[in-house]
Length: 116
Length: 113
Figure 1 (spheres, each protein chain N blue to C red):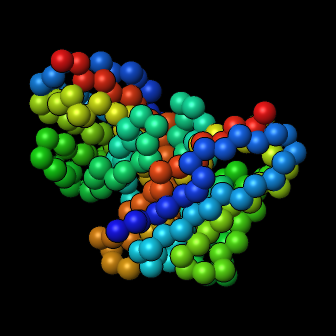
Figure 2: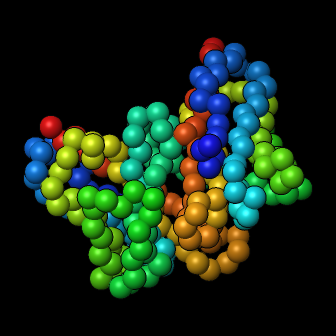
């Protein structure tokens, strides 16, 4: 099983460029999330989605946009890259079914982004 | 005050040692609690959920004290493969949706041969 797949694994952007980080999951999970992790810090939630067509802001949404047109895909868009967006980005998904499972988030391998 | 606070370490312990990590959370309305493990340059993975009565999974024991808003993780008989960063995670701990997880900054553990 692929689980949560993120592409690309690495990317270097120039200031002002834009890009889309891709995230796909094959577990039929309703909930999907985007986090960023700066060195020595915990994960901070950027955006999340509770199902196709529904997205909401997390703790640090500024400078990012998301869409959720299908259950499987949850891309993250950076419109005008800034050095402050240099980070590792993780996508995650979780189910909303079953008390035992609904709190577990499954993470992709991450995208390491540098903005220079 | 951080919503989820952990001692960053690093903790350097010899193989076979017992090591304990602590975590405090600020939101008394938090509902669920977890420990995740993150290996160097890898994604976080769930280690175990933390239940009010305390729970054990092999060499790992988790405890929750709701009155003190305190969570702990005990690792017995440490193995080299336990070297990682351990993230304390609280659900419903942020001011936003109760579905969200709030992550601590992590405690780094290195088990030495």
